[in-house]
Length: 266
Image (tube, rainbow, N blue to C red; front, side, top):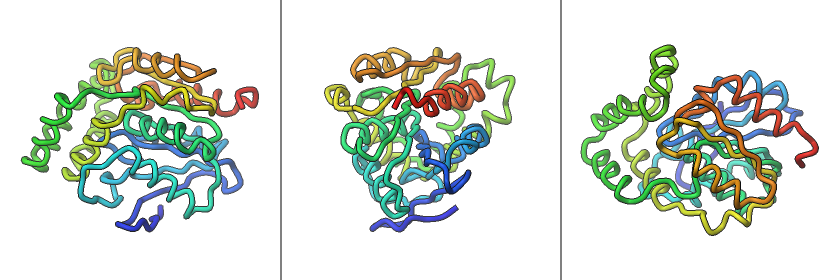
């Protein structure tokens, strides 16, 4: 664990795996922290130096006044790579992390080797969905975060998974209740305002898009939209709701590794 010094505060990060391996950077979803990737780290760290971080407003990272933007969050990533003296990375982001990945692919493709975006879309929802949530969280604070945690189980996992794996579901959803209300609301605004539908063709790095069959937040149609607009992009779909890396577990990890380790996809 360590902290990167940004102008406004500290960004929390963690490395796993050999220092000599290529770097794979993992980016968390809205309302979680770097531990949402715990399931993937053992498999990923066999081949990569895995770099995880808490997005601004989450976990142990800085919380600054909002609203944030995906560009701002993407520039946090670039600042982290610069301070760690890392030129290029593989990048895998889920939901909001997938939006950050799209921004990097569009605006900083020279820093990427391969890109994986999961359970995301070029545009997620609209203001009528996000604004009431932002207002409620800023008004009710931690009480709103607890209510969001309880509601998130149905959004993040299918009912059968939540019933069969209650400890796993609780571990992930507890991250939401622990998130700063100010940071969460500021990141909701970043997701609300992001729209890459007209810029996706600028992505030139090898891309894998992953979706969940039961994902009501970012349905498979959003993943197909991205794939269709990025030349050579691959697509994979798992039986899962919004957090396919958690619900699909080993199958998710294997598909990502297959994509990243295949030299023919360079």
